[in-house]
Picture 1 (cartoon, rainbow, N blue to C red):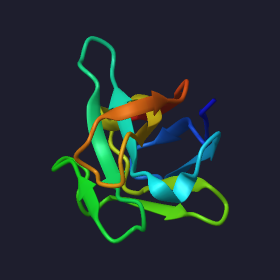
Picture 2: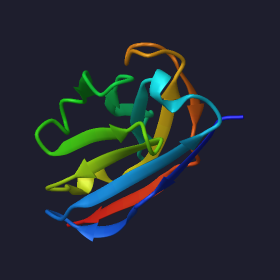
Picture 3: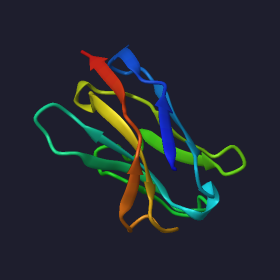
Picture 4: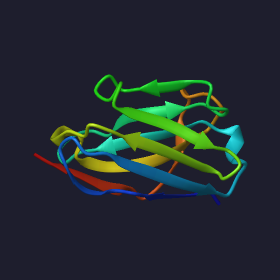
Length: 121
């Protein structure tokens, strides 16, 4: 059974940084792409960043390009999202997700429970 556990959320002021981490277990982590999604109140869930199986391909939402960075450590079965220059509009619940395949464009099949990120102005 796949388990994804996020950590690192919190309340910060605009301009600050946060690092989210996701620990995965249950199947061969290095075989699958990983993604970070977020959902703000009243809005649809959106893809923030994704990384393919070996870290060679990274995709970002336009709204976070240049501020957020996704990375993975296959030896530790973890994926992280470094978030810099945070803005109030980044406030959301952030979810870690595992793809059904090695590339970033496939279906995200497994989800964590989410971690709250709140950015005050």
